Amino acid sequence: MTLTILYFAWLRERIGTGEERVGIPAGVTTLDELITWLSARSDAHAAALADRTRLRAAIDGHYAPLGTAITGAREVSLFPPVTGG
Image: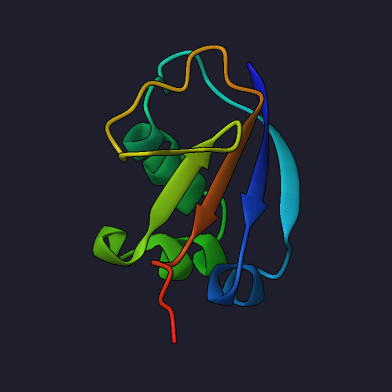
């Protein structure tokens, strides 16, 4: 499966890109597994994605908990918690 991964805010800054298109291994089926797999791509990915309590995600534009299946997804967005003010 091929996914477009979008990174926002400080995740984009730390990873060094706002978007990447990646081929996901068959055994990666949830957002949590995807984050684990992405973390192994580089030291920058590992550092940015290390603290999952500071991550939020969306699948094809819809907010989703990290345990959500990514089967059939086209796009995953990763971003920090949203704050207002």
